[in-house]
View (cartoon, rainbow, N blue to C red):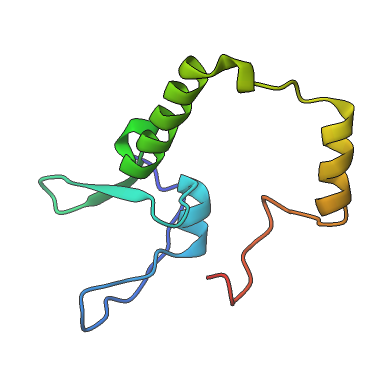
Length: 109
């Protein structure tokens, strides 16, 4: 296995560490993501992001189940996303810029 990226971190007294930013970016890790560790016979560790389905998240799964049940029980409540609704949303948040790829500030870390 060729070395593509290398980083290091320090283990705290409570056996915790911060995953370096370069590794988080490479693995596309977000807060609350799960990480899998694989250790080979030579003691080398491979770290990977665990991919989860929405069903793995009990809160999200319950919410999606609630939505599916409500849509099935009351299809008349569904509304088209029209220009008026889009204009209303733009009035509320049109000036807010969101950079999904921007690094988090110190307060957000």
